[in-house]
Image (cartoon, rainbow, N blue to C red; front, side, top):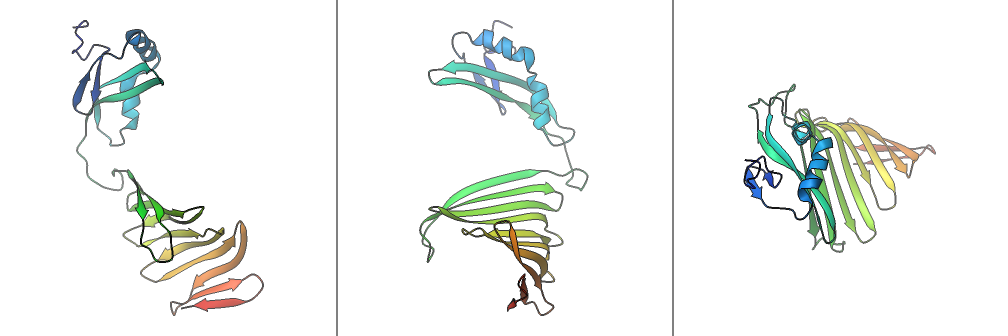
Length: 211
């Protein structure tokens, strides 16, 4: 079987998902594969990437080779995912990112937005939104979000480097506390009042209230 290029034991055979990919990577491939595999366990490396307990790596391999503009190495394999229940002690961790172009927004030129949502906690996680046009950008960062309790922390940063950092946000109560910064310098405390208004107390003793 070792001489059969279609055998999974051949160095010319690699798995991509549940599909087999066959082919030689060119002159010197077998030698470079042997050298790579001698110091690299593809099954163990792929197993480390599987976050779902009880899942099993059925087969794995590495592909290495050279071409006109450089060289490459790929790790691929086949997995058997375990059955699981989405509970606090064992939940699926997900991280999703997307980017898109924005146009037709009044007052703004064509812009680009990048979104990242990271479920790293059972009931939530973190999320970020970056909106950029030209050399200017706004960023919105949500941390420690609990979607069930509707709580978390929010930081909004303007193109001028002014940032509003709110912690202990509770959407149901319309409450939150935090501070206003210019760069790294704190210029005001921010909190919500029982009426729902936002009070900004500046370090010079003045304040303003936003409805």
